[in-house]
Image 1 (cartoon, rainbow over the protein chains, first blue to last red):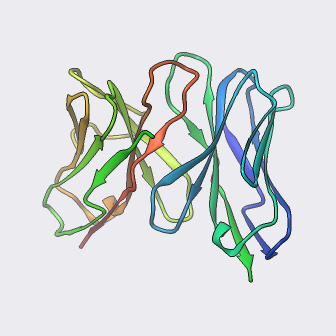
Image 2: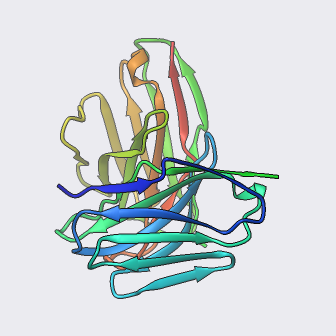
Length: 113
Length: 117
């Protein structure tokens, strides 16, 4: 079964700390992996998209890595800020003909001032 | 960048009534749109794939007569929750990709909070 798992489910850090969110997927046959941010009661904001042929993508203080062979991706947030507090979702587009994304349950991040 | 607009953001309806949610791609055409449902503290679950000009494809366990999807144009898909009941209360969100093909990411709407009383 094609699944996506995110660990930890929740994370609380002091402002300024660097942190890593983890995502694992069960099948290495993927097209791409996408990290999203979701604020309470809101939609999803795309943060980074990594193609299956790529190892990492960077945007500002965010860096996402992809290790397809081990079925893992990490989202690194540098110098965290209270405004980074949100739920971070990892989604995988598996190969096999479907266009749909398979989502993890997310990591709820709280950055304390 | 690609923008997906969803309306309404919140709706409260009485049990037994129907509710329509709209999903629009504002600056691109989308032959395919996706409808997700999210329960509290849970991840997004795909309900159906909306195809412009043809019938939607529903995921296993999703009642197609309950959740009517219409994708009448390249920029608009609608989800109608028919004869809504309290258990239909949830967060519904749509998405689309500005490009076709397997190498592109998805843009999501802002979601609709449905409360059935």
